[in-house]
Image (cartoon, rainbow, N blue to C red; front, side, top):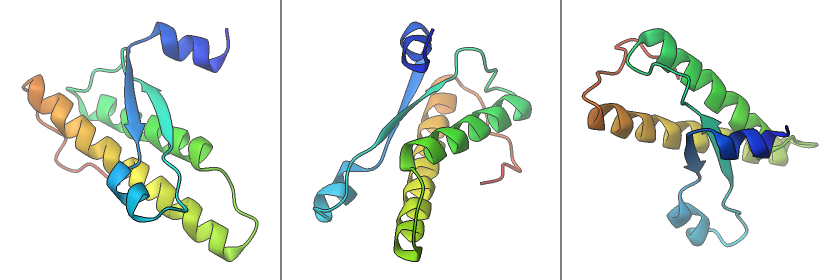
Length: 107
């Protein structure tokens, strides 16, 4: 079963760069990545840490690699934006479920 099949079969959280940022800069693309969260207990610090690790890996895959310094900056910005978006979505998800985020969560 390939990565897309697994993602389609599981409960997923869709992460995407902000469309307003992409629209403001016409040379930027909107990227999406699927992060499976069905098996995570996001009510625990460990579950939230696993979520952040999955987001980091998904962002690294979605944003690609760089061959020069300018591209490296773009890749790092892409990854940071995806992580920020994921943090916002995790906060909304935990609020909706009445869960408190771990106090000392790292970026």
